[in-house]
Length: 617
Image (cartoon, rainbow, N blue to C red; front, side):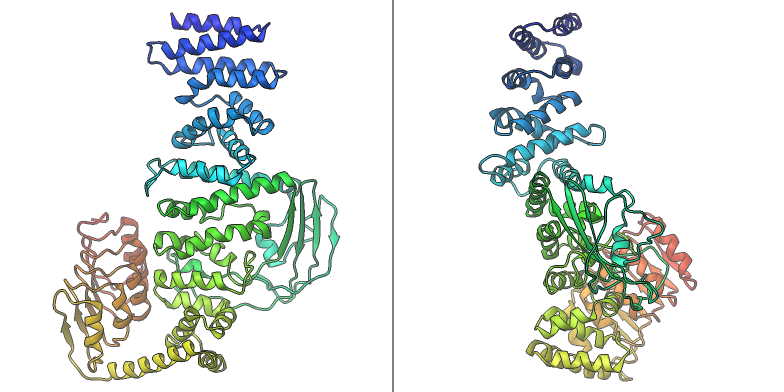
């Protein structure tokens, strides 16, 4: 019976004569769908498709007729996504009448349902476009962003954890698409434009690229260049490229000088530290968007800022933004990067490694937020304050490894010394560690670092502590003391530090910390034991950060027991540089089969391995 009724309504509505009659038929059709005892999605979807087709074939309706039809079909939208043509109709209404009460009363629950339940905007991009137009309509109300903020709050919910896992990725997808649309006309009009990397490197090939828009030469300005630049490259002058929506000013030069390159150690899968290799500065772009594009950009960047304020959303947001999913025009747009800086600051302030590690690039050789907001980076608009915050939080994550310090010494030593000269404690600590780990070979540079440290109270205090540590290290490494040592169970990092400061341990070859409460923090004491060959960490809280530090310093270690420790592939991969290892216990760890195969291939002396109760077992 129901299909017959639907067919009847299709026939009646296919030839509308008087719209008051059509509206009455639509209401009757909706009532029929709502009261039908049949549990079939097509019963609810069919009226929406009929109305969608009706609207697509009759584009000369008045605004009042628009609103009447929307109100009539509203009950069906509570449990059904609108079809594509209906989304187009809703978008048009949002653009033409953003202050209509229909937007708030009818569209709000529809958009909420889309954000909570949509799984893939790629299959229905008009759902995303409708959500975007709805948000822009909210922004046009008198309260503007306050209304948008309340809408975001309603989507998150009152508790500390949003109960709908699809809300955040859907909101981010809407924001990314909206931000891209702000620069789309310029991007499409310059399909032969240089990549951001080429702009940064100042190495555009004039013979390979012919501008499609008029270019105007400006005065050149000196700029830093990246590692790929060479001394023989000619200086490039600035250009201005204009389109009807976007005005872009590019300033770049290529007066290059050879840049140091950091050693990557081995050819294993790049880890977080590999991604810290900092790219030098890029050229600058000054982009002016049109009024509408400017409003769209401001609204959706503000939403990203709102999302970053929620603790439970921040890890996923950081992960989604880690690949830098914005066009190069956006990254070179001062207004955009200045507004987005708030989001990056929120990542840099978060103590969770899953959040702040997303400041780094997804792989070696590709820029991350750390590079873009470092001094000389395309997005850096301060003297390094954000850079100092990022370095401070990453110091804990990367645990002061040589590779981390080496990347800073080779690419950002100048900014580090400047910030230390201004009393920044993190940078003073960085300079001290560079001296302690012998990162700097040049004697003049070492003396300059010491002078910088002694010029401030905080630097002078840290340098004095470094000198004390060096004296203690000499005493610790002096020949003598036991060859074997076992700490009592429940011992802590502080207990180990206290014990090792009590005398000489230059002969210590076998150290057991099994069943103690030590963590990765004790690694900075373990690396000072020059003769250590056997280390037992069974059932401790020693993790990935500690393993990375051990792998750089204890290259003569032969036996390592990591049974029942919280180490993962991220830390275990670092062991591939410890070529002397002949016995390795990874029982009951988060070792994967791929990492196990990689370690076997790169540790030629490995003869005894325990991988029971792991994925590799």
